Amino acid sequence: QVQLQESGPGLVKPSEPLSLTCTVSGGHISSNYWSWIRQPPGKGLEWIGYIFYTGTTSYNPSLKSRVTISVDTSRNQFSLKLSSVTAADTAVYYCARARLEWSSGYYYYMDVWGKGTTVTVSS
Amino acid sequence: QSVLTQPPSVSAAPGQKVTISCSGSSSNIGNNYVSWYQQLPGTAPKLLIYENNRRPSGIPDRFSGSKSGTSATLGITGLQTGDEADYYCGTWDSSLSAGVFGGGTKLTVL
Image 1: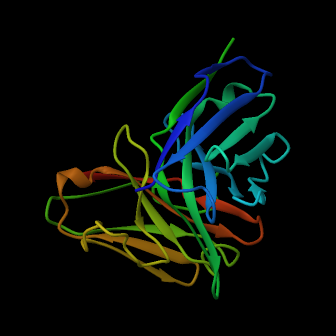
Image 2: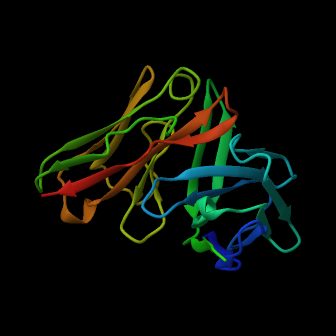
């Protein structure tokens, strides 16, 4: 059974980059899409983006200028980098396995989620 | 402001049925498939429904999904206190080329 675990610093200073890693266990990172989603305190879910194991990416237009998602198939990990953070980037960050296919419309959903990691942006 | 619109809250008594709506547009719900997620307090979201109306293994048939036009609905029958959670709809938006979620609906089982 595939499991995901986020890791990274829980505190980031304003204007610095936020970097998180998601480690995939119980399965291989190949042949799947992998997503990052975040949830500010007391608010709803916000999609950040996805990466396919080949390196193809798609990002939330509102974050696109600051987001990079990368994959390391040798380590079975994928990563998120968000540059120039502000207090508005304080959130619980989740990694998830995503399904994306097209058949008379797009199927896109996240079927396996990590437990999430809290990132606070503060000096 | 979420791309998909959900009511902020719904409530019903134990044993009753409740529905949660999710409204979008032709660029998302109207032409793509909808998923639903349950987020119990303090936990990560869990997939409840995918491809409009399919349930992952282990999800009871008390949970159902449907779609009509640019709206989708999650139905929960035989409500239990353990169903108290936030529920989110999600889909792909072809105009944005991005995943999108609803703002979430808090279910209270009175």
